[in-house]
Length: 237
Ligand code: CTP
Ligand code: MG
Image (cartoon, rainbow, N blue to C red):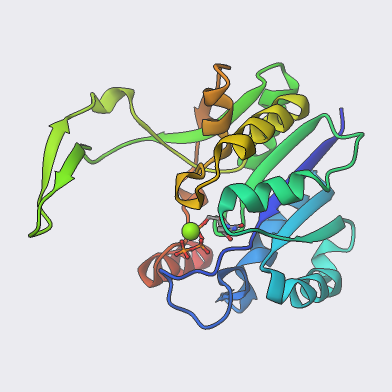
């Protein structure tokens, strides 16, 4: 089976508050995107499609092309879109016809261990058509509605925590299923604000099963400056 990894890196990183795109922000002196891409290659996946911010795609192409650690990889860079969903769709359109398993990974999950990436790919190859890594939730989570003028929100309910998982990437898919899920998702998402925040949700919307396998804390998403500090600690450990 032929496996391709999409690494989506087209976000601006507004919550991180940096003046360069988040994928280019250094962690231990190495841009987040390079950390992520190197770990994908270390997991045995040498075909990568990266979605980059349109105004930084040349810089991203140069960065990936010059990295000695990626010398064994075949990397294609495409322009991302206004939402994560659109950026993944743009990358998926550039995945070669021979691919039958596609992983979708966030560049922002820079320290995702190669063995987690390999486990997700293996679970898809073993026959689960949609696989996401996830961890049990330690907070009690409330569903809310009706935000009041002072910012308080009324609680609708408390889902049973034992049944919740906080999911990560890479998410792995049978290629035909991911194509169908994105085609249906693109037809629905006229409004950017309604775009899905992960690919599994698009598969769920088709009524297809999605399977959760154990995730890893090191696959944390770097969203805020505090997350970046935590990632620096994890990297040094
Ligand atoms: N992403 C993308 N295209 C977008 C938005 C996000 O490819 N239009 C990617 C990001 O580059 C990141 C992943 O999706 O690797 C998860 O998104 P997030 O952590 O929200 O990153 P940003 O959108 O860059 O950050 P923010 O929401 O704070 O602006
Ligand atoms: Mg975002």
